[in-house]
Structure formats: structure tokens, C-alpha cells
Amino acid sequence: GAKIGSSGDGAQIGSSGDDAQIGSSGNDAQIGSSGNGAKIGSSGNGAQIGSSGYGAKIGSSGDGAQIGSSGDGAKIGSSGDDAQIGSSGDDAQIGSSGNGAKIDSTGEGCVIMCAGINSVAKASKGSWITLSEWSYSEGKQRYIPICVKTEFVDGEKIKADTYYSLKGGVFVECIND
Image 1 (cartoon, rainbow, N blue to C red):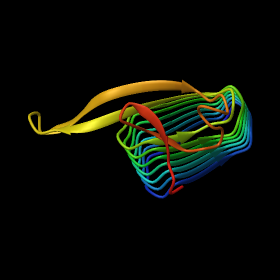
Image 2: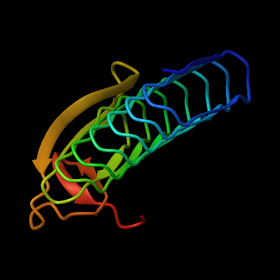
Image 3: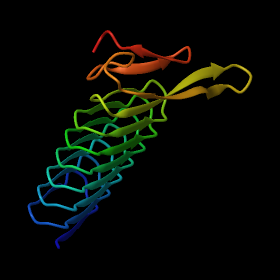
């Protein structure tokens, strides 16, 4: 039942107990938890968050977050840009609203949703991936969403363990990864 909070930059926080609640508002935080039911929140930039327990709830609002979770039933949310999120547990729910997110899930029955610009995702067979496509509008002087699409990773039409982006309204394999 540990409750840990930090508001400074460069915080290094570790917890091995169950039901940990960890919060950090500083930049460059390194947060690790090996217990079950951890709730981890970080609002700073450059956070590195790792959780090996089951049922982790991880939230990050800063840019450049690197989030890893190996337990089942993880719920991971990220609103910052350029997040790199990896999950190896089953039944993970991963959502990202930032731009340039790279999401990797190897567990079974996972759901990945990327709302940001230039995001890519890959998942195992039996999982679902939702991607969004954006285009620059000269009239509005900003990027606008032009397509949002969900595909089931069946291993044939959508290959397992292959990064995809949404281009022209269709899922396209990312060659450079």
C-alpha cells in the first residue's frame, strides 16, 4: 500500500510492493514498480516508467515518455508527443493522444488506440489497432483529422508484430522499422 509522490526533476522512484500509488510531476523521472495493482502517474517530460505487476494503470502527460509494462491487464494512457510504449501482458488497453507515438504490444487480446499525428502501432494476432490519419489544412492553418480506422490483427490482412500507420485511409506497413 505504498504511496509515493515527487515534484522534483530527475526523480528516481522504485516500489516492489502491491497496490503502489506513485506520482511524479518533475521532468526525467524514472519510475519502477514490480507489485500488482500499481497506479503510476507522471506529468513531466522524458519519463521512463516500468511496471512488471498485473493490473497496472499508467498515465503520462509529458513528451518523450518511455513506458513499459509486462503484467496482464495493464491500462496505459499517454498524452505527450513521441511516446514509446511497450506492453507484453495480455488484455492490455493502450491509448495515446500525442503525436509520433510508437506502440508495441506482444500480449494477446490487446486494444491499441493512437489518436495523434504520425503514430505507428503493432500488435499480436487477436488484438485490435485503431489509427488516425491527419492532413494539413491550408484554410485552417493546422492539421485536421481526415480518417480514423480500426483493424483486427488477423495475421493475414493485418500481419502480427508488424508496425502499421494509416495512409490514404488504409493500414500501411512501416518499412523502416
